[in-house]
Length: 131
Image 1 (cartoon, rainbow, N blue to C red):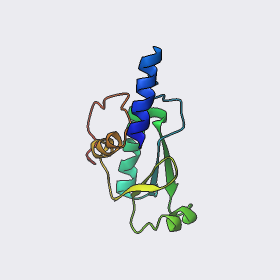
Image 2 (cartoon, rainbow, N blue to C red):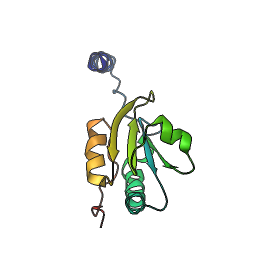
Image 3 (tube, one colour):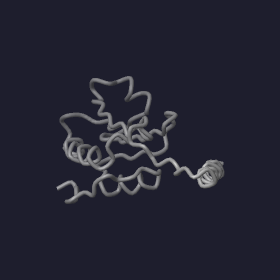
Image 4 (cartoon, rainbow, N blue to C red):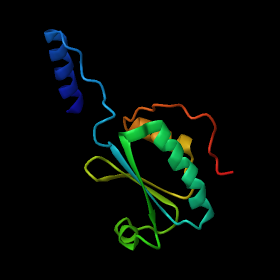
C-alpha cells in the first residue's frame, strides 16, 4: 500500500513538474531504540559506545533511550526484560519490531536499521566488537 501511494505521489510530482519529497531528518524519529541495562554490567557499559555511534550515524531518525533496570522498573516489566542488556526497537506507532539480548555490535544494528528504511548520515570509522 505504501509503495502504491509513493508511486502515485511520485507520478503526480513528475506530471506537475515538482520534485518528489525527500526523507527529511527533521521529522519525528522513525524508530525508538530502548537500551535496557544498568550502569554496572560489563556488556551494558560496552553498549554506551554503540549508542554514541548510532546517534552519529542516524541522527534524529531515531530516538535512543537508556533505561536502568534498577531505576526504571516499570519499563523493565513492560518490555519483559529477562537479561541485560536488552535492546528493544519500536516503530513510529510504538509497536515492538525487534528485540535483542546481550551486546549488540553497531554494524549489526545498522544493518537492521537500514533494512527498516533509515538512512546512515555518516559511515562508522572503526568497529565496535565488544573489546
